[in-house]
Amino acid sequence: MEEVMRSLKTFIVATAVALSASVASAQLVNETFPYADGNLVGNGGWQSHSGVAPVVVAGGKAIVDNVAGSQDVNKPITATLGAGGTFYAALDVSMDAAAPLDIPTGGTTVVSTYFAHFKDTAATTGSNFRGRIFATGITGSDYTYGLNATSSSPTAPAASWATGYAFGSTQRVVVSFSFDDGLAKLWVDPVNELSTSISHTGGALQSIAAFGLRQSSEGAGADAIETVDNLCIATNFADALNCTPEPGTAMLIGLGAMMIFRRRR
Image 1 (spheres, rainbow, N blue to C red):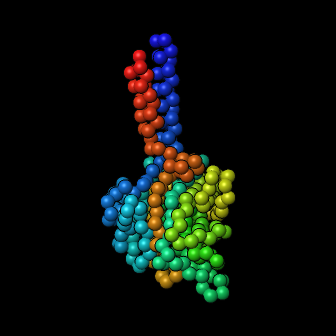
Image 2: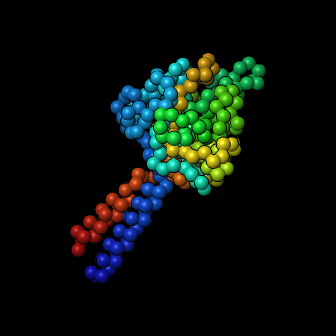
Image 3: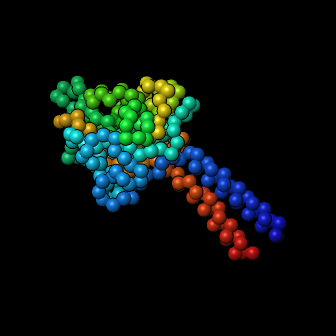
């Protein structure tokens, strides 16, 4: 019996260590915005890289407003994307019905604005953005999402999601960027990486070290207010989508199991 217990303990420790290492290497950011209402900058490593009118936290969520001179912020990622790598970022997004995105009469030009993106450095400087997520108008619904691997054009995301959504609803949006080929992809409410996505390629060989939230000053028709929560960034799709527990959780589980076995002896 003693030999069996020793074997069980060894197995539990080895499993916990392996799981903990796996989580540590896969998940890079797990941000639930658990801060007091007020400015986001100064909490959880968030810092400003542009503008002055602050991104704020309200009710445990980040509020990305869009007014002239507004602040853009970023959170460092605990790794830097380099050769052979892909980053995945997932976030819960809802749009404020009080600030719709316009589709001008005739439907020929959709006014859009990007509100989230990967960033080249974790510093307060640097503006090489990749995988920009747009909020954009869509005929027959209140809004949808757009994607551009590199450009910040306010009127033409390179790819647009085909489904529209109602103000006040919430979507789980996933964006990825691959270093080697500059491929950006976007999913809305996916089940897994094989779910429907849109993509755009551009800006290869760009290292990534932060994730940004952007408050637009595009002007009338592009002033949607986004609410962002549960931002998770990982080196694989599943750990970003599902917000795998932060590094160390698996180890604690394993140690807890060890204590149970010890008490039973």
